[in-house]
Image (cartoon, rainbow, N blue to C red):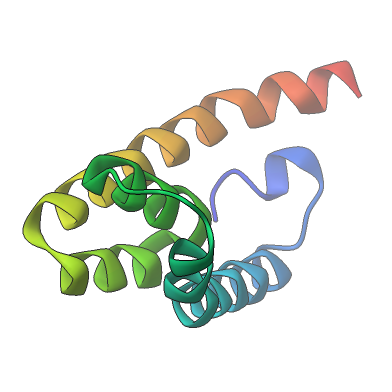
Length: 93
């Protein structure tokens, strides 16, 4: 939430959309993985961690330990990239 004001966004609204994205990803993620031809456990964890944040990481951990670890790493790296990219995007815009 600390990055939101630096680009002119509302921290409260940002939090709401993060939670909604996580819950929707958790609910729909497993169905999408069953529909898509993804067989790799690493790919399943990465998809859930990147798309559904903490809730997706919890769902990935339910699928298996390997999926949970990869989801955690993906979520952390995505968050780190966002924190570094937000000020650059704000400066460009």
